[in-house]
Length: 229
Image 1 (spheres, rainbow, N blue to C red):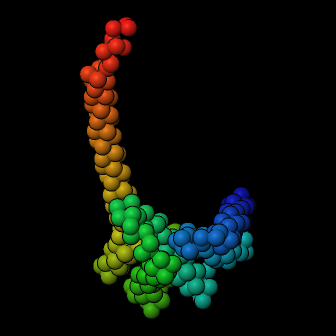
Image 2: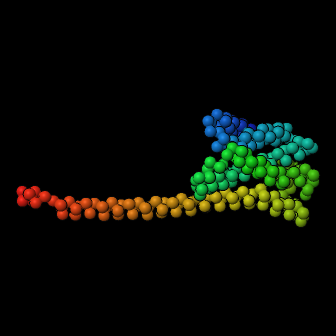
Image 3: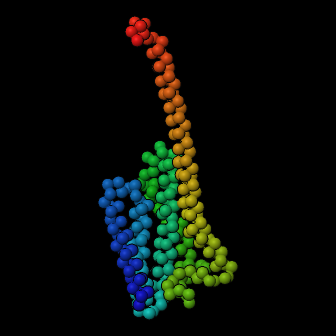
C-alpha cells in the first residue's frame, strides 16, 4: 500500500512540476533559447503519463504483458535515455558560448531542434532493435514487475547489445557533459588570469604616471611661490 502511494505521489508530482516548468518556458519571450530545457521537461511529462499505466498494473496486481508491455518498455527506455542527452546538449551549448562568445549568434532555434532530433535518432537506434527481438523483446522478468531489457542475460549477443546500449545511451552523453564542464572551467580560470595581468599593468602605469606628474609639478613650480613659502 505504501509503495502504491509513493508511486502515485511521484507520478502526480512529476506531472505538476514538469508541467509548471514547461508552461513557464513556453511563455518566456526568449523561449527559443531554452529548447533543451523545454525538451527535458516535456520528456518528464510524457514519462509521468506513461507511469500511470505502471501504477495501474501495480494496483491491480497484474503484470505487464502483450502490447502494453512492449509500449512501456520502448517508450520508457527511449524517454529515459533521451533525458540523459539533454543535459549533455545544454553543457555543450554553454561550452561553445564560453569558448567562442562570438559564435553565440550562430546557435539558432533550428540548430537546437536539430540537436534534439539527432539525439532522438541516436536513442531510437538503441531502443528499436528489441521491438524486433534483437537481442530479445521487451518483457517483464522475475526481478522486475515492469517491462525492460533483461539485464541478467549472460549470452554473448545480449552482452554485446548492452555494450552498444551503454555506449550510445550513457557513455557518450556523459563524456560530452564532463568534457564541456572541464573546458569551461579551464577557460574561466585562464580568463581570470588574463584579467588580473592587464589590471596589474594598468595600476603600474597609473602609479608611474602619478610619479611623473609629481616630478613635473616640482620642476615647474613658480620661483615667487617658492620664496613666499
